[in-house]
Image (cartoon, rainbow, N blue to C red; front, side, top):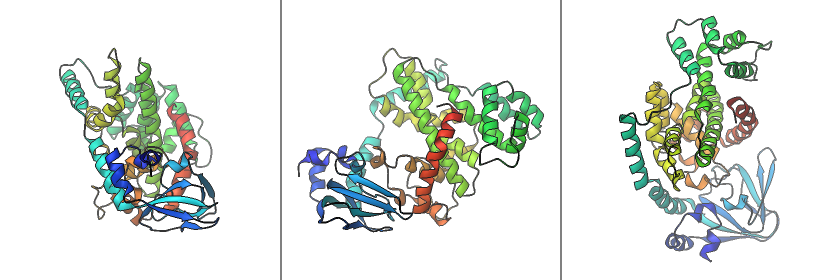
Amino acid sequence: MKLSSLKQFEQFSQLSDDQLIILSKHLKTYTCKAKGDIVLPLGSNSPYEFFLLQGSLQLTAEDGMHKEIKAGSDDARLSVARLRPSFYEVSALQPSRLLVIHNETLKDIVAKTRNAQSKPTQASHILLTKLQEDLTSNQFRLPSLPKVALKVRELINTGEAHVAEVEQVLNTDPSIVTKLIRTANSPIYRRGHACNGCHDAVMRLGLATTKQLVMSFSLKQLFKARHKETRLAMQESWRKSVQVGTLCQLLAQRANMNPETALLVGLLHNIGELPVLMYLDQLEEIPADMAILLKDLNIPMAVEVLQHWEFEPLVIDAIAQGCQWFASDVQAAVDYRDVLIVAKLHSVIGSNEQFQYPRMDEVPAFRKLALEGSMTPELSLQLIQESQEQLDEMFHMLGI
């Protein structure tokens, strides 16, 4: 098989020619001779990954929902029904041909590439050193929290705040009040009559939830840039934050954890990109490897920002460890790091980024949530569907 034919698949696209030659020695061909031939049963724990070369397949979920995949389409760029146990029964719609490889073999080859790519580049080291030097000399300052969010947090953290005092601070920012009222009237919080004002919204939400939501609503104000490249990168960073935050919130509800804290962890998981983009925005020319710089510097800068903003260790630790896919102790209680990891993996399902991440069922965080009954293949599908339903609402509330 030509190496160029293998490059069409996302999991193989970043491999070198030498790695593709090694890979090709492990690939086998699976042929479906007629419509209806089963490739993968529903709930299968097959250790193999399947890539559609020719023909078309039908994926049938447990609830009867169908999805068709045609060879050469965007959907066919990823391996078919990748998670285990399989969420779908996979069958042929016509005579078809697939490539098959053992998951452990593929994982070993891809992991070597991923590890090489995950090492910070020399340019990232240089930029991080320069950025930290400029921070120390006050030539560059970390972003500050918006005043309303800061005042609300300080007031509520005293433990002696009254609703009327919080309402007075909130009323200085009508846009946040509007979002709080909308949230209080959403299906998650609505009880009985509709909230028509700030006081009613805070009463219904409670002070702790109000504090977290105000912080979430305020973050969007920080994402401003003068260069087109950094402005677009900020928009994408914020969009991704909202997507992961929404998934964190839904996961936390299932795991009986605080959904607003989980939302905040998701919204802040890539906050380290903000000061990097602000710093780059000051330059006359934006580096061509900006995406690599953001990936390399997000975690160290996120910790700097969150410590500067005096966030509680629970939030900082979850974000600092949110890329340690295999570090979580399966015997320990589920924490916000686990929620963040599973949310991030859900956020890339079906995207071109998916191959860069471990398979969901391989990470301890997914198994921990599964042991609690808050994450199964069926609930995972439901989560994806619910998150799509809530994303439009969240995008509207958080300013996208």
